[in-house]
Image (cartoon, rainbow, N blue to C red):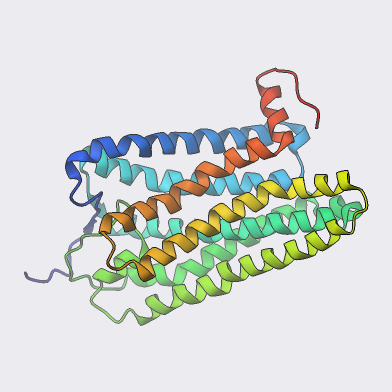
Length: 312
C-alpha cells in the first residue's frame, strides 16, 4: 500500500466487528449522553438560580458540571455520527481541536477536584475564616488558574500534530480524536509527544491526587479532634460527595491506564469500551452523587419543583 502524506482527513472508528450492531450500541450511549446533559445542566441551573447555593463549594461544583458538559458536547457529535450515519471522516483541524479540548478538560477535571478539596480543607480546618478566604474573587481566580494550567499544558503536543506528516492508514481507533491515537499515524520523530504527556500526568494529575490525599488526612485529623459525635458526622458528611467524585474519577483513570499498559492482548473492543467508561462514567455519576448526598442540592430541586423542602 502506498504512503499518503497529504490526506486532509482521518477516519474515525466505532466498534470494529460490530458495525451491524452500531444502531443498537448507540441507544445506551445516547441515553448516557442525555442523562449527562440533563443532570449537569440541572445542577448548573440550580446553582445559578438558587441564592442558597451561592457559596464557594457550589461554585466549584458548577465548574465540575461545566467540565463534564464540555467533554460530552465535544465527543457526542462524532460518536453518534459514526454509529448512526457511518460518518467517519473528520478533517485534521477538527480532529486536532477535538483532541485538544478532550485532553484539556481531563486536566481541568483533576484541577477542579483539587480546588474542591481545598474548599473542604478551609471549611473544616478554618471555618471562621472560610468566607473571608474563599471570596468570590478568589474562587474566580482559582477557576481561571485551573483552566489556564490545563490549556497551556496540553497546547505543545497538539501544536506539533499540525507539523507532522501522516503516512499510515489514517484510521483512528475511536469515534473521537485522541492525541495518543493520532501520533501513531505520524511519520516523524514523536519522542517529545510520547514523553511529554507522561510528564504532564505525573506533574499534574498525580500531584493533584497526592495533594487531595494529604489534605484529607489533615481534614480527618481535624474531625477526629471534634468532641461532639454529631458534629463529627456533619463535618464528614460535607466531604462525602467530593470523596465519591474523586474515587469515580481516579478509579476510571487507573482502569483506563491499566487496560492500555497491561491489556495489550485484550480484544480491541475492551479498550474502546473502557475509553467510553472513562469519558461517560464520571460525568454521569457526579450529578447523581451530589443529588443523593447533598441536602442543599436536594432542597434546591424541591424548590425548583415547588415541593416542601426537607430540613438540613
